[in-house]
Image 1: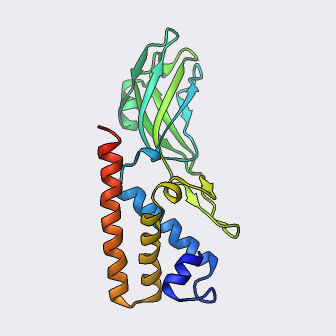
Image 2: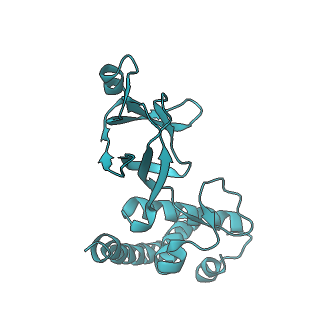
Image 3: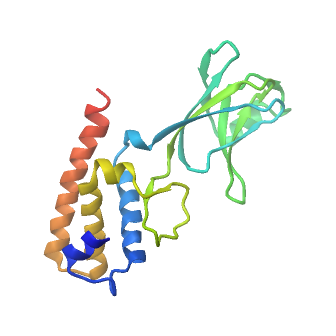
Length: 206
């Protein structure tokens, strides 16, 4: 918070904690969209409920990457993703067996599930591999209601320059200039995001 105010030479009467926190939140979301980073990937293990076609999804889930059925002998099988209409046509009688397909299912209250076909006949293990919502770096005054909040995040520790330059782009957009400073930090952000992408999708995975 202090660094953004120091670099813009604007005090807390204009750039309050709450406003800068929004800059941070928007920058984290931007980086999250720009790069398929390893830190955003997560796995959780749950169990099927025999006779129940639905599985609750984690609250911090943004994108479900894959679903793995883990049999009693520890054999792992990936379920195939289909749409809801396919699930209904494939298993109109809710026949039970070993799940082969899954589809996304959203309730009106926002709760997310996956629907399975066939309906599980046994309480086998299942692993959900997914992209989580970005961690949010927050101050003591932050009141944002998001699943992942911490005073120390992956970006703040491993890519602080990238996070800072993104916040400065947000700040100069909010302050409406000067345009040369906005462009300066936009270019710095672009350079850092390229380096971060190379690290995450290149060097870390080769």
